[in-house]
Every structure is written in C-alpha cells, then in structure tokens.
Length: 434
Image (cartoon, rainbow, N blue to C red; front, side, top):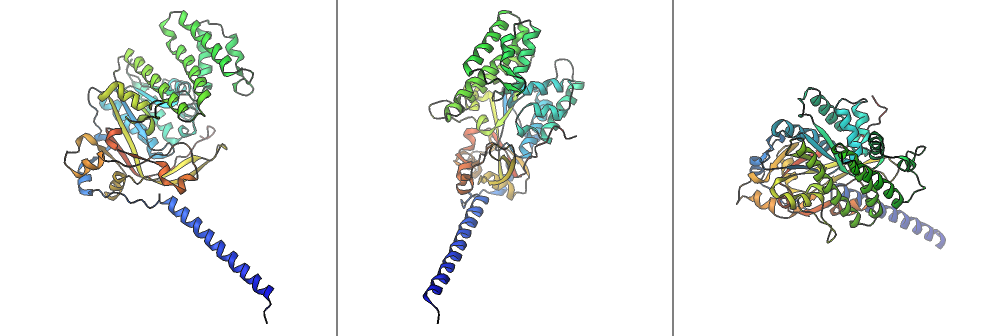
C-alpha cells in the first residue's frame, strides 16, 4: 500500500518535470521567434516586376548636380556592407571623378589612413586599426585602403584620393596630430602636453573636461592668430578635440547626445566639402550607418540626423543610398569585454524578400526609374519595415524584433537602396596578424 508521503513526493517530481518542460518550451519559442524575426508577414511583391527594375551596383547613376553622395549601411557588423564601401566608392571615382571619401570614423584616425594612402609607412592593416573602431579592423577595410594607396601611386598631381573622418567620438590620434602641428608652427605646447598621460595612453584624470577644453581652445586661438592658411587642418584637429569633449558631456543623455553628435558630423562634412572645393572637387562621397545617411531622421524636437541636415541644405544635390538585408548574421560587441558575438536578424523588408525570391545576392534599386502607377512604385512609397542594427545588442531584440526595425517609407529616406539577401558577419583582425 502506497503511503501519502510517497504520493506527494511523486506528485512533486511530476510538477517539477512539467515545469522544466514548460520552461524549455518558452525558451524554444523565444529563441525561434527571435531568430526568425517574429511572425510578421511580409507584404508580397510581384517578383517579375521587381526584376525589371533591379540592377547591379555598376548601374548606380548620379545626377550631375549632386555634391554629396551618401552610402548608408543597415548594420556595421557585416562583410557585405563593408565591401560596398569599396565597390561604390570605386564606381564614384572612375565614373564621376569623386576624389574624397568621408567615413563615420574618428577624424584623426582617418588622417592616419590618409597619410598611409599617400605613401606613408606601415601597413594597410595598421592604418585601418588607427581609425579606432573594431568595425574597421577588417579585411574589407584593408582592401579599401590598399586600393586607395595603389590608385594614388599613379595618380596625377591633384587627382589623388583622400580619406576623411567626420566623427569625433575618439580623440587619441587627433590629440597627437594637434600636438605635432602646434610644434611645427611654433605654438606653445607645455599646457597641451600636460593633458596627456603617457603611461595610460589617454587624457590625464587630473583635468576636468572644462580644463581640457580651455587648454585646447588656447592652442586653437594661437594657431588662428598666425593668419596662415596652412594651419587649417591643425585648427580642425583642435575642433575635433573640442567636439569630443562637448559630446562626452551629454552622450549619456539619450537623444540629446545623439543629436549633438549628428549636428557636429554635419558641420564636419561641410568642412570636408570646403577642403575638396579648394582642391577643385565639387562632389564628395560619405559613408555611415543608415540612420546618419537617410534624408529624414529627427530626434524629436532636439535635432536632426546628419543626412536630414544635408538634405535640408542641399536638396537634390544630396544623393542618399540606403542598404537593407533579408537575413543578416551580424557581429556585435558583447558588453564591454571587447569580445564579439554573432546574432541573426531578419528585416521583414518586402524589397529584400523580393530580391531573395529573384535569386539576387546583391542588387540595386533606383527609385527614380520605377514607373508611376506600378505596384512596386506604391510599395516603395508606402510605409514598411527596414532593418536597423547598430553597434550594440540587447536581449530585447530577440523578444521584440521590431526593436531592430524601422517603420518607414523608403522613398522618403533614400534615392535608392542596395539590397543584400544574406549578409555575413565581419571578422575583426588584430594588428599583429600578417
């Protein structure tokens, strides 16, 4: 005869097993829900009609009046979007005479690359590492830098390519180049040198942000008082350091910090345009995340994204190329450890879905070529999902896939899009590798 205690023990184990099964079921549901991007249905597109308008990267056509060509990327951590930088820039150089590439990277770090592509010492891999962000320490960026150096080795005087950075989030290279320039122009550097902790390789903790800004501003004013046109880049190094300090004060303040950064990237892009105009070049090529490149993007009442500011000022003279994916396995940082991990996302973009169904690996869709009255014209003007993965990961992305998508009208944001059906993760290189 079974005792009551034995029955309770058996019931307890049955409940535990059922609970474990239920938890595994919930886990599996969350995993597959997140992996496949939820259960949102993609609006079907007529693939025959889509194929009539889809073209190759070489088909990209830029109007003569354009002064800034922007290439966006739906993610920072994919090979294909990195490779597009070279593919599209090379086309702009060969077909449209563009001679400047401005990158969403530290200005000082990009100056290190610029010196390298003009015959400076080192390797392309070391130059890429100088930009500072892991997303640029890749084989694809090395290939871009190698190509620019090779091009410059045979370019006629004044026809050389230049690389600029319009970002200010990092400061090490800009600091050292400012110090170098100040010494060259015989500007006092004693106080500037005190700011740097050589043992740590960064600003000394003994100075507040305002104290650092005061010293850098003094060096800037000393350079300006020389009234020498050759100090323009040195002054810009100082500006980058001042911008870095300003953004650092508010970067953790939500949209306020992001909006300030975008407004300063707009100012810096303008400065790059002026430098290139002085060299006789009327058009520049810029590249950054879609969110910085798209024509319409604001941060509430605080401000607008760089691309929106450019579009407001230049109108049709700003040509914005967006990118999107059907499926992307993205390399993203794992917390603050410096390690990276791959995560898979689905955009649920019907244009990307159509590209996949048509068998394209990559294709270009020029919105201006799509005839009025067609179904495709309606679908590019209507609101739809597009992928939007930044340089960060949250478990919320698996539970709520809409957190990495934007509900937008493609034609309001871009002049056309490059669609990648299956994007692969970047591999971050180490400078010690051959």
